[in-house]
Length: 297
Image: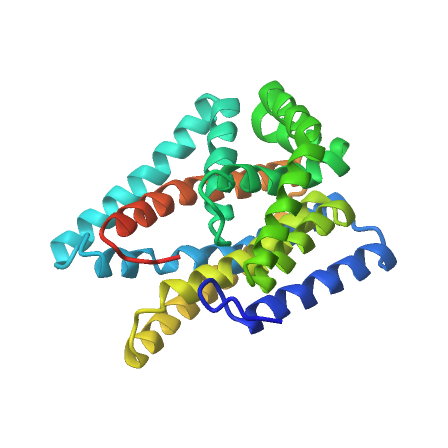
């Protein structure tokens, strides 16, 4: 089996495969988990996988010379936060449009995990969303309706209807990767198609986002740093994660105490809107860095 050294190491893939296998076993053999616990687990997983995922954006921007002074740092953070806030405001004003934008941006961004031809990237990215929509239509319809209202329900139906065709495209793309000796990339994509069948949508998302996409982004983002800088970056990532976990752990008992019939839905909605808010400025940083010939991810 060849290692895809240009897009990720073997250890990264093997950890993802191990977590994926464990998740499948737990879902098949474990007890049913109620909606409240699912919501809390989702929030905790995104805190662990999401905040470190974007923690290196200032470093990427600095390396791309988007800022180099303290004044530049302040401007960068203000613009970053303003972009995130505008996404939240826009989503609340037009949930269906906000959800559609988030799904489109996510599809393009996620497909960048593999060395795909540009014509296949949006199709494979959309396939990652269509896998669970095809096999778990009720759950995905509930989730997207929760996030985008009737427009979200329509999007769920479209993704589900396109599921068979997009799955075929993804598997053909995986075959192409295997032919090009990108064996691990092909295995990852095939595994995700399988997980979309076996795991509930939120579990599928957590396994992919927290145990493949985010670790890959972090490793590649720090690839150009020297040993001293990497230690500093790891300290920043650890600090952000520790602070987030502390805040979440402190709030968890309070959240549990105020649980209402809509509490789990509210938490899931907050998690995904927050992800969207961070994804847009994150993608802008990636795009600007790429234009300056920086390879952050």
